[in-house]
Image (cartoon, rainbow over all chains, first blue to last red):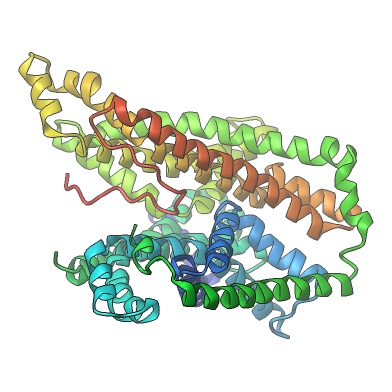
Length: 229
Length: 290
């Protein structure tokens, strides 16, 4: 590998804004993560509630969304919701695609957030709920004051895993015409096929750099916040 | 488990109240459904012709079934290759040699962190330069390779954590009867670990099947691609996508049920713990240190 080779590879970075592409992925992850967390928490509340119809609605949602490929959901958002039903989330063309992709990512990952929270609820010992009942707390009070605070702390590890998967899955937004990292990688490889390996490893390590710290932070947080039992 | 103790068996007052909440919840759900239907109706998407076409043979014979075959073919090949990859690197992570352990660990961690789509695009464009495979098979090979490296790494983690979760007595007994460490791994530990991990492996199959749909982006003719082509030909893209999603849901739901059944069956045949796992995004492999 001579100097010219490396220089030519580096000159690619002047022509293509790699960081901007990754920034799109981070933004997708951020917005979809918040929406998925809200929707997933509502679903989890529904699934542990005493009302049978809510439980049923929650588990149906999770079963349906969890078993559908994310690619279909994202394509559906663009071709179905926007193309056929005329759902417009922004008058700007690019922003519209971005928001549709966020919508698709959120509804898919909400199902997994719900399951992560439910597994958090399962880490709370039965005695905690029994004690809450015994001192006369109702469902809402015992859920809000006793169960959920412990459940969230027990759910940090699985929630972190969902966040990591969401980061990687943000590349699927390429199926929804969003210009992000995987699409830019394709363009760059097509433009300079001779340095394909370096281009691939640049992008791959970009994701490793995002995902590994997330994983480490999750592990540390879940250890530190774990309820000592 | 604690869902059942979050509330007591409802008394008469709660039962009355619950009826109202049930009614309210039903009204909300039906309301949302009705709103969606009215939106669909307003856009002409409820036109029976757009839906009844799926009751005839043509769209199935010409589009959906060939697409499904494409999906299943990619998934089947990827399952086999991921299993081989996972076994090799899983054993690598359990190896007595520190170098082999470190290399396998780095490979597994790397491929678990890289998005599958990125790998598929890389193999798709990369292999086209090398002239190793027929251009016609290129997307299939790229899909299978992408799936293999990611899911193989997950399988490797499953093998490792499966072995770590076995009771210590299994290895000690194997060594006591004079087996070498590699023999103990091969004859005693890994077979039991695989049995214990069978339910988790089965739910990873759902992930493989779902991820074949990424092939759509690199022009692999699978179910989603077939549905899109059918939809743009017949003008019923929305309906085609819904049908494709339903096919995926039915197959994946059956696989999940199978995983649950397996957990009950194999539990008795291993000293590890077989636990049914719902399909998840990331298989939690425990915090056992290497």
